[in-house]
Length: 405
Image (cartoon, rainbow, N blue to C red; front, side, top):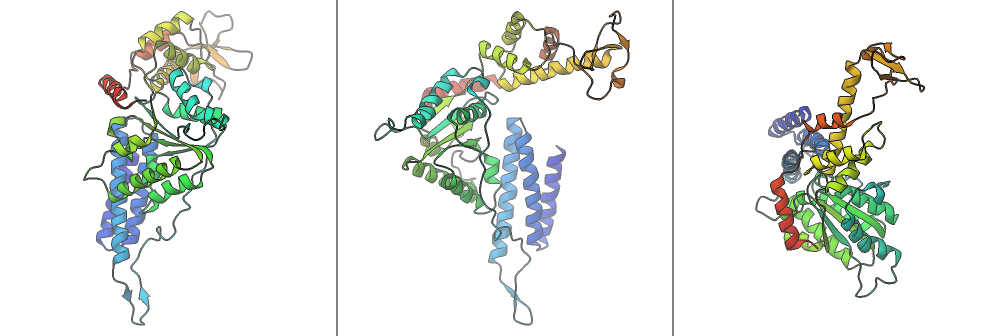
């Protein structure tokens, strides 16, 4: 929240500078505000807050663009020697950034993605097979070039796209709506164009939260948003007509807000649902794999049953919360014992190896957490709940029946 306050402060200072005729300073201040909002957007998990941040970022961008446009169109002043003297302006437009995006190396495998067997199968058919057997996918047998992943937040949409890139052994270019819309006037659409033109023939372009830039058209859309949407539609159509083996994968939590023309550009639309009980158990096992624990298979079954409605991210938070309860045991302990690896772990006062020592006296990096048990996760369940609105699930099912493929 402190970051958002700082962004507002910079924007207020920008407005004052703009009113004083200092367009260059105003633009610089708006750039700082947008930078802060962009970082906050990427780190924010709450969907409502993310949309609020994104909309505020667009407002500041439009104000900066407006100042720049007015500055560029203003009358050139001359000094007494007849030499033109331009008003104070920021040169961000003339110093156009090198609009490139580097591929991100994916280390995520199919085995790292719990469940989602149907989605994996469709992704393999759509992407892996055409890349491995291009001789088959010719003429009328054209491979899919665009896939939309949709569903509740935290269900693994980004993860499955990364895993697909790893299994196919092709470059993975990942961008978000914030990456696109944080560019300056004219740069956003150039960014989209260069992204499609300059990437390798075989690669995956992943666009996260595509609904933020490709929502339904309305009168409140800024000119910048309209240009970006149009450019994306053009580039995707050009991709379909080309021989490039580039696959566009986009993710959204709100598929019903997509512009109909954008929705039609995605040939495959795959629903990524909440994990079922079996998958939640797998996610629990993955999160606990590197942690000392004495949870039995029956314990995991119970926790999986009690986390109905949780997404993968919620299950991860549950385990992390359980770890904090294990840490609390360490903080409250008055006796520890020394382990063979030189670290200390809490123990009963009656333990033959017990050493009377407080938590704060244990040397740095010499603490070992006690094995997590079921009680730690049960305590965590008292404070951790699902982050998904159950009323939204019906909308996903309805949209799937109407537009899913």
